[in-house]
Image (cartoon, rainbow, N blue to C red):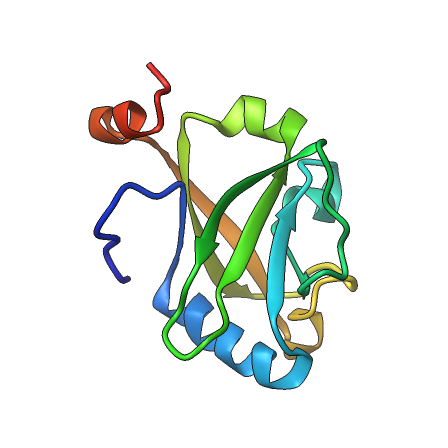
Length: 129
């Protein structure tokens, strides 16, 4: 996994970055949204950039920049963010069937969030103390 040089809220595992490079060749620029709804809605959903319309009800957690891929915005619903704002997220990929709406579904894999509480330094960087 690539270590960020500055505090980030979200990052990728190497397998997720490799999958995103393949998916971009198929679908063009991409974006993520995590709603926090039930079932598949609690998983990060990957869409062609701009296909999912964000609004004031969403928070931009960060922009992922895997090597050789157009930067990918990661959005979360504001209500879900209130629960997760002290948490660092890592987007990973695992075998299995995900949502039919997310672009990785036909690949036989699904994106998954791994999380941990932010460190003291990260909390300070994001003014969360």
